[in-house]
Length: 145
Image (cartoon, rainbow, N blue to C red; front, side, top):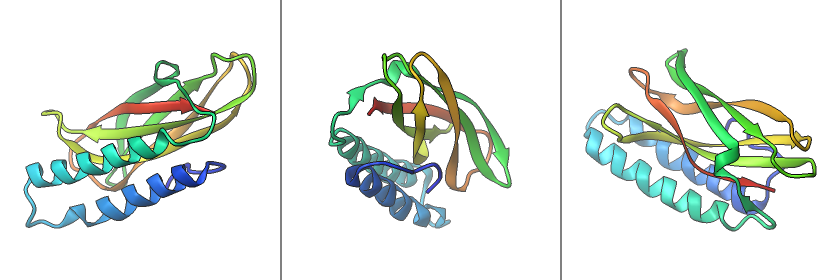
């Protein structure tokens, strides 16, 4: 899983759940609707687990997803976290890749570490599997810890 470091057990469990559940999404017998339904279930579960990170504060407004580009078939978006607190902090975000119809195609958990107070840092969110087209990266949830 890309960019998952220094996080609690709940975060690691969320990341493992997303990776395990979405790796099989390349099965060509599945419809886009069934893939989206499965991805949405994974996102919901990961969101609940992100809420279990000790000392985490909702920080969705501090985290932004940049435009998505295609690198070797995978969707990649630069995620920028701006630390609005008075102390150095880590940010963890759930990033969903959505098609033009809003269907969730894939999701990843990204952690941006050691951001000084008032500063910004970036990390790449990279899809777990090849995605066609250029899906939009959307921050579903973000926490500061």
